[in-house]
Image 1 (cartoon, protein in one colour):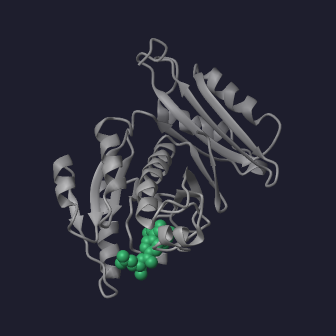
Image 2: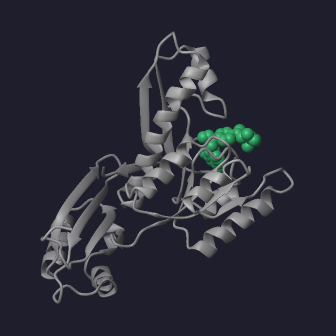
Length: 293
Ligand SMILES: Nc1nc2c(c(=O)[nH]1)N[C@@H](CN(C=O)c1ccc(C(=O)N[C@@H](CCC(=O)O)C(=O)O)cc1)CN2
C-alpha cells in the first residue's frame, strides 16, 4: 500500500446511465466534495445504444469522507436523475469476492485458478469446488478447499442443482466459475445465476460450439484456435463474452496438439475474465459486455 493510500479506504464505483452532458463532472464533484481522491477513471459512451458506462477507483480521506454506507446513501440521493436510468454500485476493494469453482474431469483451468488464488494473483476467497466426478478431490484436498462430488444424471439433475444453490447460499458465494464443467445448467439455474456464473468454452466463439470443438477445428483446418470466457445463459455457448484468447496453429497440428495448445488459451481467457469480474471491471449490456481492462 503506497503513502498515497495509507489508512485510506479504496472503493470502486461502477455506474451506467443514459448518456448526458455533465455525468462525469457530477460524479467527480460528488467525490471531491467528500474528500475522495480519484485514482482511476474509465468511461465509454455507446453511441449505438445511447448508454454511458463509467468505472472510478477512488480513495477516501480518514476523518473527512463519510463511511461507505453513508457515502452510498448520499450518492443515491445526489446522482441518479429520473431521466438517466442511473444504475450504480460501490465496492470496497478490501472485500474479497467469494468464488465457487465447478469442474468435471479436465483439471488445467481449475489448477491454474487455484495457483493464482494461492499466490495472491487473484484476490478472491474460494468457497468450494463442486464436481460431477470424484476425480479431482485430491487437488482440492491439497489446497485445503472443500470438495463436493455431486453426480449428474437426467434423474438427479434437479436435486444436484438444488444442492449447488444450497452451497452457494451457505457459503455466501458471489461468483460461480465453470472451469471445464461439462454439464449443461438448466434454464432455472441460469436465471438464478444470471451475471454471476462464468464459463470457459474451449473454442474461439462463435466458432465450434458444443462439446468437441478441437476435433471440429481440426476438421475445418483452422490456423487459429482459442477459448472464450462468457457469462452462462440458458442458450448454450451464447452468453455475453468477457474475454477471448487465441494461438496460431497450422497443418502439422493433430487434434491432440490442438487440445494441448487450447489448454493454455483456456487458462488465460478464464483467469483474465475472473480477474475482470472480481475487480468490478465488467458491465453487462444486453447480450454483450463492456470491460474496462
Ligand atoms: N446453460 C449452460 N450451461 C453450460 C454452458 C452454457 O453455455 N450454458 N456451458 C457449458 C460448457 N460447455 C461448453 O463450454 C459445454 C459443456 C457440455 C456440453 C454437453 O453437450 N454436455 C453433454 C454431456 C457431456 C458429458 O457428460 O460429458 C450434456 O450435457 O448432455 C456442451 C457444452 C457448461 N454448462
